[in-house]
Length: 394
Image (cartoon, rainbow, N blue to C red):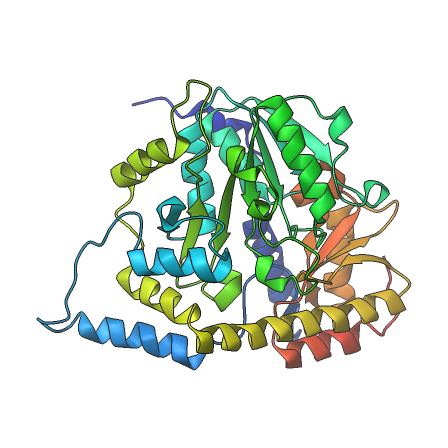
């Protein structure tokens, strides 16, 4: 029998969210009468807007006819969808040839890690989405630098103390802290990457929650970013496509390896080798999202989640807790000094029957924090808020 991939033994015991689910099931088993509300995993709850669902339904019905059937599409994605992404979301700062449509940002992060290989060094925001670290470890990357992002540094890394690495993972609006990088901060990041010959992997999956026009939604709003950055994004939070699966990656033609080879060309070679393209049905949904009606509909849903965030934030602050995020982002980041994250998670579950996410699951700097999500029905949000009026015992 073959040997196990040794990199799996280097991972932490379990991926964060399955462990949360396991604890939730145990609590429900022990307390069958309890009505548990989840403010934990970042999954959308509102239905997909009707015009977008209709577009996917129509495409699915077409596949049942001789005239409408289609098989494999272009691996890079339908040209019309790539053009709409470039124009509607990036205002033609990038070209459609630099857009690669996929089955989601998470999958693309894994493929990017495959593209870059195991010999790269990486720097990762701490705390951060666990996939950045876990995917790197599975790939065989051993040189991982954590960049602490805490209230003390306004959730932006101290670049002067950050060693040079090949790759920097950066997410804004940030999961889990809810922090949003300013134009000045991203300019510093791009300048740092240029001076160190580093590639920024910029995760903009939550960009649609940014309401402040002074805050960048894309790394490509920063001059010079095309020479040092890749951007990964998704329809999951933009349009409620968490179950539909549709995303995109931007790899500028100007981004090149040290030998002058375009990264775009290697990415195209990789994706055509291991990926047959996103679902035809999902891509039709994506095109409907980027029509005028679709954009208005998803904007309303986004606004509902942002209102949820503000309602939760007020309730948490009324407890006297130290709360960050929740503005221009769907996540709230709460500090419980001198407490362990899993300890607070359990206390919140037992006190209020509310599921949250322990901050320690996002990295060392997340210890002592809890993430609350604004993804939830308004009814559940109000129920949770009413429960949070009771004293907290931990």
